[in-house]
Length: 324
Ligand code: GLU
Image (cartoon, rainbow, N blue to C red; front, top):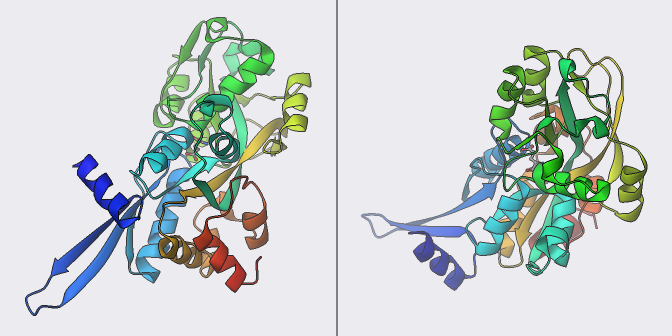
């Protein structure tokens, strides 16, 4: 089914879009175009991004959209590349690497990757059980750490940080790869000492972790992190505000990326135009759909965090709206 669908959509030049013609008895034809948006785990913010976009698209346009849960950034980029999905959410660092064929995408360059807009900031969050006495990133050595599920942005970015530190997975007593939906329980049940999650704050999964067990957010700073930030445009300093999570009254310093919304050069121009328009023309409503979206501005969504070229459908809308 999958390969049939792929060749069908390729033939139409509509990556990830399935066009269904419904023959009606009177000879009339209703055309509905279905497409999918790649998100992340159900307890994360990407899932809300995808669901929110689909809600607006389904209401405002002729297109029909679904936003299933996926493994996250890397899984989404790969699904867009293979034509299985039309669009998806991905961290700005992995958008950069996929487009440029660097880091994990070395030898696997996706030069048809296109940016549509950026969304919320995503700090690199490290959450530890208080009884594990982890007060700095370096204290993770020798501990049981959930480093992120395969296909996720957090696992890929964790590998970059570990590389910068000269660490391997062998440096942990355990390096588990549980999904975000499982990690808070693993922390609470004392199956791991700490979890890594690159995700918009505040989010339900970290809230769950800090309310089910005494847990502290761990600062991620120091010379290696400073170097990563100064050498790479897609990393910035980030703060997890004090009081956001139970038992964590003080600001915690870390670094972060941006969530971005991406497509392929093969994704239909009109589709991307309509999706972009649905979000930007219903922007006040979009911003209420998750606390991480509250501070978004249209200007920053067009200018920040996008390193791949803009998709022509998005560009058309931004020009029309005076944003470019
Ligand atoms: N940043 C994570 C990833 O790229 C996903 C975070 C979320 O689901 O909100 O996999």
